[in-house]
Image 1 (cartoon, rainbow, N blue to C red):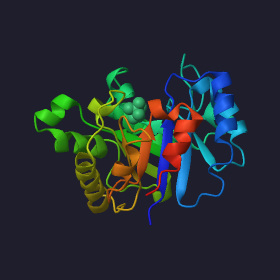
Image 2: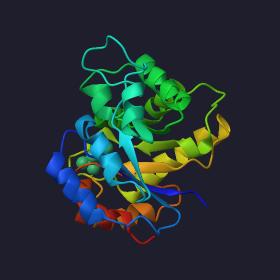
Image 3: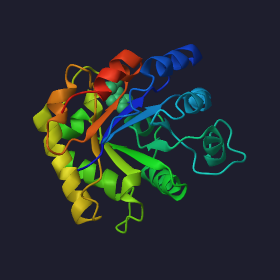
Image 4: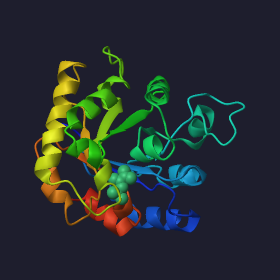
Length: 248
Ligand code: PEP
């Protein structure tokens, strides 16, 4: 049985008060839930608060990014020493906003992937195609390239420490969610690659892109979808609670 993961990516949202309120309202929801993992990724300034407020609550706090160095002269960046000092347990790498808005290259993404694994954090590795790539029939090649350039053939990591999030770029923050059929097709494809090339068929594969409490069930009912990476609908505890507690 693969672990189900409901991960919240708050991006550049939720200030201190909202962060405190979220953890107060979410409370002990995850404490006695087996087989499901709650991951929350606040912005850097609130990581420490989130780590403190989530202690003993069975919640993993994730950073939305990391610069692949321990510390030093890297203005504006946050490296491993600071993330460890805050107490994070996971890091998101390869999000489409980092690839497309900040122009992250395959090379930098690969360095971050290796860095996260060498630091023994859980890796939440995001991949996904643009609408133009889908419509021009490049879909499978794009996904393969994103995976192959990030991992070498001897994937060294603990299988419990890697989660892949398939997030079609056209579905992120647009309100246009992939149909369960479209998502399942891609998840099955990704799982095949992870099995054949890396011997990691059982890693959790999450769907991301306009997931909401009222559409999560249809997606989670699909055989190869193990959870969700959620942006907008994860900002408030009430909505995140509904996502986390969805009934499969
Ligand atoms: C995301 O940022 O990873 C995401 C899926 O956002 P949203 O749920 O808002 O589409």
